[in-house]
Amino acid sequence: VPDAVPRRRVSPALIDDPALEGYTMSAGTFVLPGRAAPRGRAASSGDARAVVDAVAERVRQHLAQQEVLFSLPVSVSARHIHVSREALDALYGRGYELHPVKDLSQPGQYASSETLTVVGPRLRSIGDVRILGPCRAYTQVELAPTDGRVLGLATLPIRESGQLAGALSVTLVGPAGSLTAPAAIRATRHVHASPEEARRVSVSPNQRVRVRVRGEAGVVLDNVLIRVHERYRLDLHLDTDDANAAGLVGGEMVDVLRG
Ligand SMILES: [Zn+2]
Image (tube, rainbow, N blue to C red; front, side):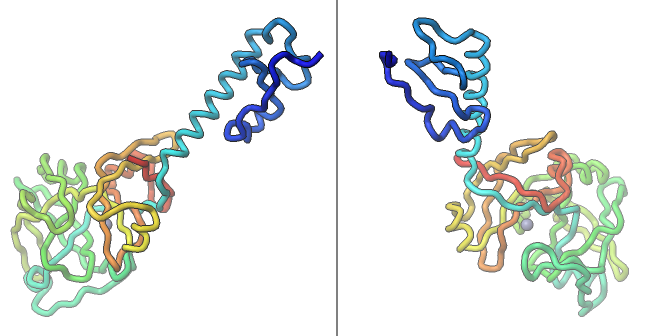
């Protein structure tokens, strides 16, 4: 005798989980594989619970996947300094040229062999802070909050690179001299992308997105700024405090979330 209600397969979107393979649904009741279809009674409540749990898990995974706009690699930026030509003259001597030692993830940017000592209020200092080249139009000291604490700069403002309004004053000491300037910031979390990459992953310049880091120390990072330039390459830049909190060392893939 055929069932009164025709049986249908569970939707294909839900059934690519092997745990669900072979289940059929009859008038709203799941039927375990290899068992007789219920005739006038439901499957046992334990069976039903297992199936409901499995479906709920699959739906959760499906929705989590839909949230992901695109994935990209992480670079971790340790504390560093960008210098103007004039600052480099003052700190290393007139006409001094930086010596590149390592290319960074963004084309044309490099870590130099030159470092400076950063001195905060009350003469607390951090030595061997790397200068990144080439020279820029401004001098900027990018610190993580932990560095700020060491220097006695508890209220580092979060700023986009080059926007130094409200930056905290520090003294930079080099082999040829020193200078004091309002230059210390915490860099805004940001994604670099070329115009073509931005188009491909459907983000626009200066948009802010959320980034999810998976794993045991997983986090969701809010207010991640999209920065677009011809010379950029798709890459998420985090400071060492953000990276440490999320258990990242650099090179991992993370997900930019929709909305
Ligand atoms: Zn960057």
